[in-house]
Image (cartoon, rainbow, N blue to C red; front, top):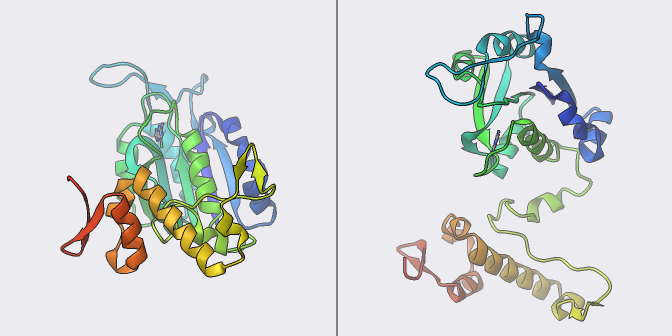
Length: 260
Ligand code: 6GU
């Protein structure tokens, strides 16, 4: 996979050299290239922004500078990703889909954002897909951190990245649609807190059931949106019992929360 990131703060993306993403780069799994948007500016001051038409606070990034930059990095097509708090939420499903693509380009905006014609223009190219995405309901100063988030979420899913592919299945927001169960290691007692006895029992069936109960209970407590999205066909009698303890019942084949 190839990933190009365009930013006016290329140093902000140096964490991509570190840790597992850095290892994936070294091993040739992914080719990450970080570009300075100002390299495509044409004036002496390397200007990339201007005042907004219609007035208002802040500066808007110019479409002409972005256009020459993106024409270069998207010369052979690709998936253009634009981090913005007004984009569609980035989910594990998005990351899984992007992990199958050969070429991602991330256009990091700063100031009040990028002139809206940039996304509109590239969306008309048959060899380019445009996705504006958000990493949550809060505002960042620019897209760089959101670009790091996307690269890490996608690169760890590339075949050959993780030693044990099973660790990808059970984790939070994996295929089961549940938050992860709590995990423990040695020592068995720490700060007067004991590791749940079942985990020391060696009964693999009981351990699996306990973990699923914990995942269901945690998801029911913290993320009713995830419970509502579960497929009842994937739930067994014990699953429904745990969910019932948190107020969920099946009504017309759908999970529904008591009092709603
Ligand atoms: Cl993707 N970009 C920016 N600038 N702010 C954000 C965001 C993205 N997601 C949440 N806040």
